[in-house]
Length: 258
Image 1: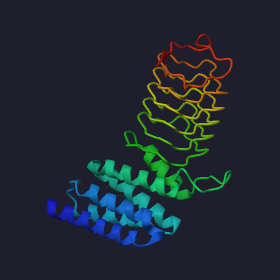
Image 2 (image 1 turned 60 degrees about the vertical axis):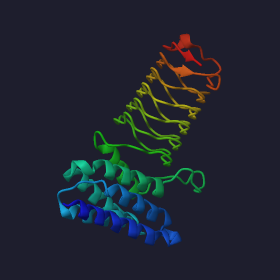
Image 3 (image 1 turned 30 degrees about the vertical axis):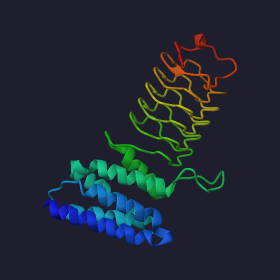
Image 4 (image 1 turned 90 degrees about the vertical axis):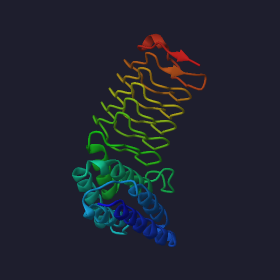
């Protein structure tokens, strides 16, 4: 496909996005289309139909009908499988979709959280492909079941993972700064070199978790179960809050304090 055609596809997305921005009901997703249009300008593809399919998929994501949104997600999944160079764009689009459909902070009353079928599908696509560019920042994932998944390097700043099931999950090098992990099940999770700065971990279960070289500066670890956890090389400061009975000798810890 010529660069001219790629630019035309990008312009079409931007124009559609601007049109949606005129409607308060579609304002957020209109912004997503504008961003997607800018990203598409840099996407080099061989199949002229790929841009059209991508544009249609993104339009479907803005539908009021859940089944249409799921169709759009299926289309994006197929595009990522067919065109390796489109994968980062697809991953970013799905991440933006999650931030719109399941945002954090949210006005939803306490106790009313629960992933809708389209959100569950988006998560399944994003987390089911090895090497995906996973950015779940500002997403409401309360109570999500992410146990035993490979999420190394994922970014989830200021997200809500309260009560999430992360048993045995690989979270190495993840960025979880200011994320709510209260009451989360992190038993046996690997958090090597993870950044948990100012994270909320009150009541989280970190038994046998590996926090080697993790950044815990400002993290609230009160009431956390650290039995058999490993904290060797973890970075802490005066803002790090520990359980009342915590001593480094009780876990494998050689802490580095600022």
